[in-house]
Image 1: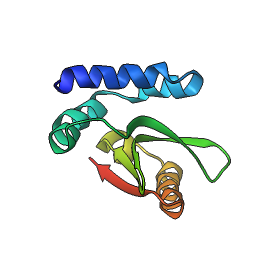
Image 2 (image 1 turned 180 degrees about the vertical axis):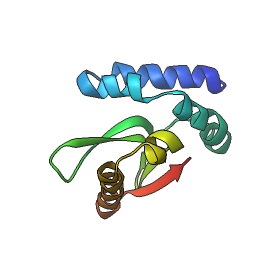
Image 3 (image 1 turned 135 degrees about the vertical axis):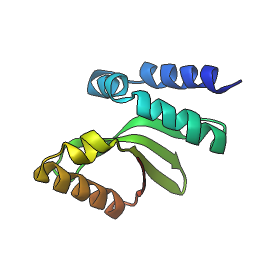
Image 4 (image 1 turned 30 degrees about the vertical axis):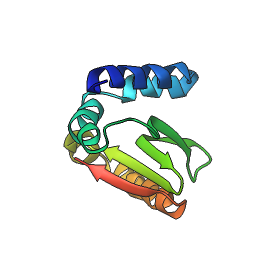
Length: 119
């Protein structure tokens, strides 16, 4: 199998397992940057999508939910992978949103996640 067929299967399987907001986030939140990361970084490095979850839902410190672009979960690892575009994640954010994003990452780390960010 190659990237294209494995990617289509990966996305189809995750979409099949979801509904409601989790499905909407997968369909709307997984875009060009996320696919490019998988094709140019993840696939050449790892060669499979085993234990990788796109748009992974986590509880947040405000009793709500947040979504990681990707979560790699394989005991003992819980790694959150974020793909951050310059515009939506830095240039176009308010001070409040900027502070919230930093607090979000701090809470993920406190909860035992390792967080890796790509621009």
